[in-house]
Image 1 (tube, rainbow, N blue to C red):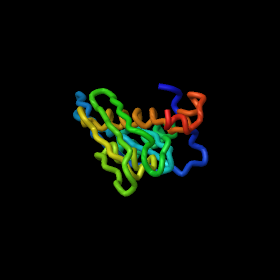
Image 2 (image 1 turned 30 degrees about the vertical axis):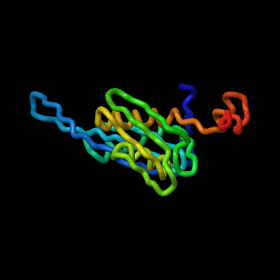
Image 3 (image 1 turned 180 degrees about the vertical axis):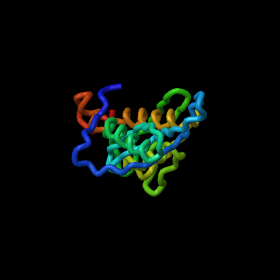
Image 4 (image 1 turned 180 degrees about the horizontal axis):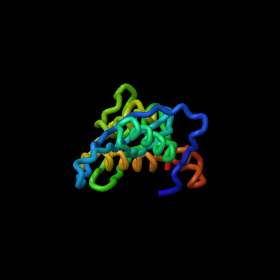
Length: 170
């Protein structure tokens, strides 16, 4: 994969969405110790998105840590007329995802963890399918990997050193 389009958090209006919360139990000699882990997605709904994992003894603190972690992993995703520029597949662990551009008015046809990311990045029309593991951690990471590999026609033309018309017409 070529260089990932990293983004700085300065002057961005980021909205956060909670994907999943897990209660983790550690059994000790003194009893059970409960803690929480939270997967959070942040995005500006205009092509920038990031994911983060926060762990703490309280839910609110875990979410806050997740938001801070997500702000460190922001990437820029090309969006073309409310959808993605091309079909893309990716996998992470046992989770496999498939993203396909859709016509205007289709909406976001995706499951829970994928839907949160696609809506946070600002995609309004897309067809998405997840296969294999439904583990939300791996599903979120696989979706981010698919979005990170997206390239628009201008980027492809620039990398190949040809005009945008030649990208489409061979």
